[in-house]
Length: 73
Image (cartoon, rainbow, N blue to C red; front, side):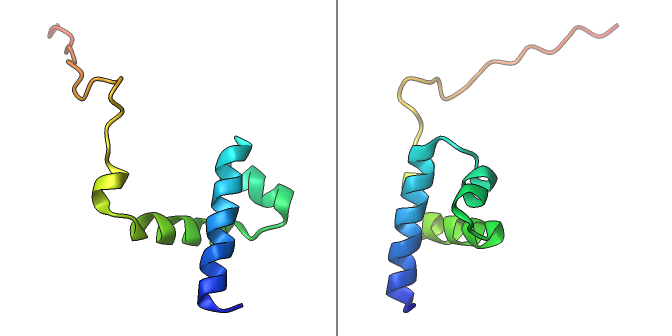
């Protein structure tokens, strides 16, 4: 497989995995994929996206949470 073919294969595989609702390990077992290759390509293709797109906040969730520390004894 050429590099563009590999990119396309893993893009589709990762898309199918996300739609499956399975964990990465369970999906790889079901599809007879090597898990460490799955993780490699997931990281590689995620890093290829712009950094800003990886860190977008969910507009419905608060960006900050107030934590309360217990009173000292």
